Length: 181
Image: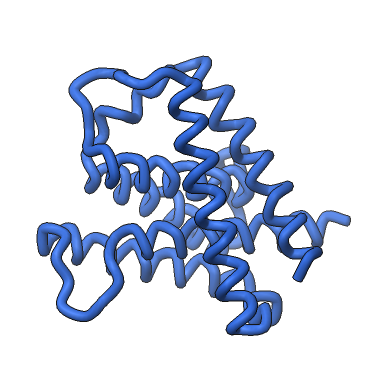
């Protein structure tokens, strides 16, 4: 599992670099997004991946990889927004945004380590398309919880679903990286 941890960290570092560059370009403009909008943004990314997988071709010159990176980054944004709520303006410094990013990325890694221990890295035996379907399922669960005003009777909350989306996206990115070698 130490190989998986180093792969996870490498992928998160790449995602963080893109997040950081976008912070320089746009600031933390995402702070104005309400929770539902973040979830819908992740849906757009996952749905595009599924469309590319089903059609076998993309007409826009961006493949699956940047969409998975976006799912990781919007998943972390979702966790930040869940904790802080949305703002009326870009109210966060890049330094604070990156500090929060690192904290949630680390929590995602710890969850991945625990689940990999219990499931014995079963994700490595899954088809890449299954990651897409599982991300979409988590999105639909999140939308339902949001419709229920964040309340659940027995199920995990929105945060657990965001963490799972992040981790499945990282698994997809690891798989792409491994297949490109």
